[in-house]
Length: 213
Image 1 (cartoon, helix red, strand yellow):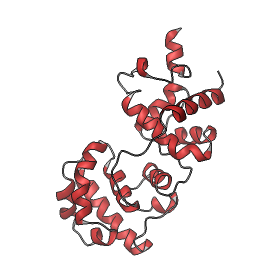
Image 2: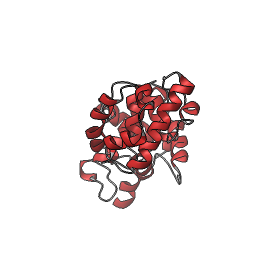
Image 3: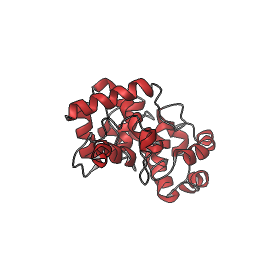
Image 4: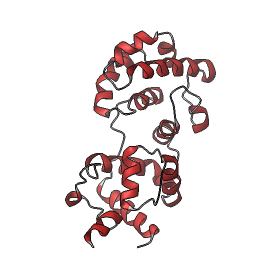
């Protein structure tokens, strides 16, 4: 099976069986999504969604958050992972948004990565979800699933995974494909025990086919 055939098979299955695929983070605008994704690093979306309603009520805009203190923000997010550094990054990011971007979340990866605590993955999520750009954010789920299935080969970094994926996925599908692969990794192709008996991708999955031999 060629890589092209594997991509076509997997994408076709997702398109037919997972037509509704979106972020499980709760947000109403670009700023809220940016904050939620920053908080989600090494933390579950469920936990993030528990803390963001109160946080967003207190700080609905970059301007409002920029006027807070690190301790103020920490009080709202103390139950997420690494709350100290995340509170620091959120405050610094809010201030930079106000000072450099008039309170508007940038629509490109380069500018987004100038925000404290915002790496390529977070920037890609914002560009794909908010601005519908063909950017592929690679988290631990996507990194693992892509290599298992055979959509990537020998990928050692998230960036290498990203480059291999965007080479074969049609641009208009990239934002949705991010959610397809992420949700598949979160609920089916899990790290310790993939649920292969429940998976619709076994026909194209490189690891499954190898283990059958």
